[in-house]
Image (cartoon, rainbow, N blue to C red):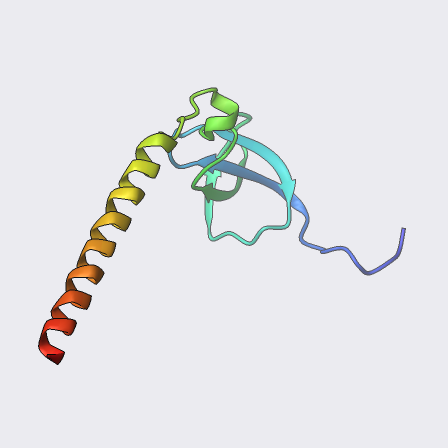
Length: 98
């Protein structure tokens, strides 16, 4: 291994998922300001995460299926409305030119 390329502040850190409250202890060099007491009674730096394998839909099996047909229909409705407005402006502009 090459020397002097690794961070010197490599230590155990508690990672907590803020959406579920689940936590795990792992080695990291992430900078934190908060600490927490772990199950073994020791105090460790705490890193709060917005999403982890505890809450991510891929890992929990609660994936949401997107209604693509509904999105396509909405897009086509907006497109038709936009074309109708453009046609109305075009016919209005022709009427004003005469």
